[in-house]
Every structure is written in C-alpha cells, then in structure tokens.
Amino acid sequence: MADQKVLIVDDEESIRDMLRMALELHDFACIECGDITQAYRLIVDERPDVVVLDWMLPEGNGTELLRRLRREEATQFLPVIMLTAKTQRDNIIQGLELGADDYVTKPFAPKELVARIRALLRRSQPGSGQDQLTVGNLVLDKRSHRVLVAGLPLETGPTEFKLLHFFMSNPERAYSRSQVLDQVWGANVYVEERTVDVHIRRLRKALNTPHGDYSSLIETVRGIGYRFSSHHKG
Image (cartoon, rainbow, N blue to C red; front, side, top):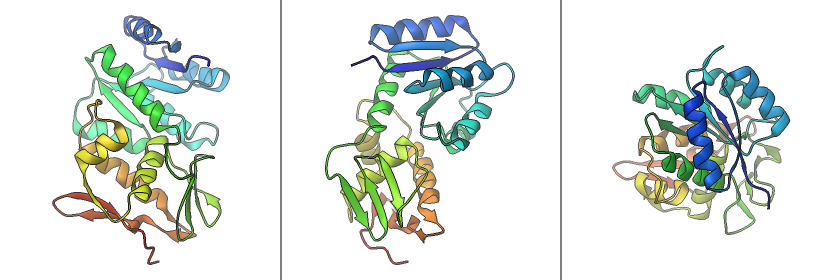
C-alpha cells in the first residue's frame, strides 16, 4: 500500500525539515510549502491524506485556508491539524470550531505530532462494528463513511464521524470526557478534555437539519459527561 501523504504548511523551513524527517522515518510521504496559496494548489493537485497547517503564515492566517477547505465539497472532510504557537484556550477553540480536527502547540516533540497524525487518520476511517447504525431517519453508514438524515448527507468531519459512530454504537450509557477521549482519540494521545466539548458542539450543530433535529440525541449528563439516546423525540 502506498505511503499516506502529509502536507506540511509552515513558513519556517527548519520546522518543515524537522517534520519531514520525523514523518518519513515513520513511512509517511511528505510534501511541503510555506504559504496558503501554494498550499491550496498542492491540496488540489496532490490530494494529501492529512494537512499539518500552521496558524501564522504569509499572505494570511492558516485559518483562512481552513475556512476555504471546509466550504468546498472536495475538501470539506480533509483531516487538518493546526500547528500553532497560540496557547490561549480561546485560540485553540477557535481553530477547532472553524473545522480543525486537532491542534499541536509549539514547541512540540515531532513524535507527538506523528502520534496525532496516526490517530487522526484512524479516526477518518470507518471503525469496527455494524456497517449501518440507525435512529429514526438518522443513518450512519460505515461503508460509505457518510451520515444521512432522510437520505440526505450531512457535513461531518472525520472526528465528528468517529464520535457519532462511538455514541450510536453505545447508546443509553453515560461516558465521562476522559472515556470519550480514550475511545475516540486513543488512550496514548494527549488531548485536553475541553476538546470533547468543542467537537460535541460541532456534531450537535451538524445534526440540527431542516429535515430533522437530532442534536438532542447527544445528552449532557451533569457532573459526568455525555450520553447518546437511542430514541428520537422530534
């Protein structure tokens, strides 16, 4: 099987070199660039499996490219990890809410980024279990990696898909944020528990559709975490 391809978008050549060496050591194929214009061309032409995108770039922020990727049908599900020196919680949440699937703050260990890329790529693939899960007109199809409401596809990123698959496979049971992190992100990847809340909010937003509001299926359990209801009331 061909190596999975990673696009590194960072204007610091030393960081690109460091990441390329670490990724190639772990059998990833790498392409790289230093600005958002070239990055978009490479995404269209090279079709990477995942993008590592720096926040601060010439010609605009990486968040501008992220917005464009999420608007366009061909790239709306492309896994993206934000690479940022911005450690403030609000900046991290902003990146996640704009559509990033994960984030790594500088300085970081290349080994950590490799682990996060692997975890994200696992999340972007259908998991084990039933091929199709259904609640009312909400259908999660593992084979096509799509979520449908009344036969119409929803826009969900790879993390939201894996999150919904986990909940629909384990209904009517309350899970803490740390349990959700272990099951969806992986026990060996460090992610703040706050990240779960951001992705739950994104998933609820996606599930509130003109053809049926399924956002209430994901229930907040005060003092514990979240639970998925197997009964659609609306």
